[in-house]
Image 1: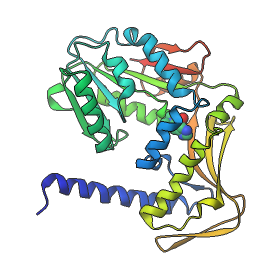
Image 2: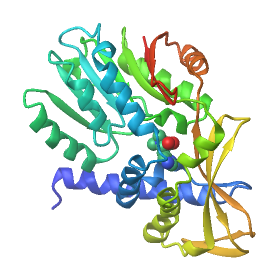
Image 3: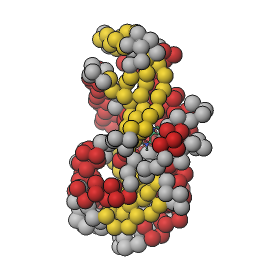
Length: 320
Ligand code: AVJ
């Protein structure tokens, strides 16, 4: 007999596999082939992303961390005693610790992530660093409407969404997500959200095309994952990583470029690639401060304060 939580784990796994398979087969069937960037983050991909955050060219993580360290006390001003901090896609919760240090009176920290393993790891570390903090872990896709634990219902809520993850969405999708957050944090919720700023295109492209080739490995790992989990036969040596800045859309695009005419088979389905043809694997939108504030207004948020670094590389917004 299966333990109830084991059955849950298994069905979660199959559901995810299924979703992965249909997204891959669907994405590769379109005229402009695409693969959704949320599938980058298997165990290997998460490891590679951690390595990206430490690259000299990849400024967002260290810049946002510095902004949080410099201004965390101001950022949490106005969050009443007994409030709740809710993080969407919490991952390792490492940046959250900077904010938590300023919140001794917090009633609970609610972390939401699709990865049970990431939540368990974060929970363990937080128990050591904040022994009296009430930490609630919710395994969920934060982009779907969710309800917070019943016993926290009457409490003031502050959302936390760092990392410029919002940049992976198109502006239309971003507005929809901000509305989901608005509802989850209502009434009178606030949101602290990180957004990468528009800047010199060369600087941007370098951040996604590092000299050590870590971002290339991160991008190509998607094909390795398809081979591993869906029985695909991608030849990883026959695709190359590309990162370009698309000024019309104000976004970095990552692609995998086929180096020759070739066919790939995945779960019995054949996909042909011409030499030079791309698979579009990620968008990372960059927002000027006023652009991001317009986006927030479109989702019924009021922009409040905003913090940046001295070189205007990254922004952290308070919405209320
Ligand atoms: C995690 C979405 C913020 O877009 O900068 C890093 C992901 N992709 N290098 C970003 C990423 C390639 C990252 N985000």
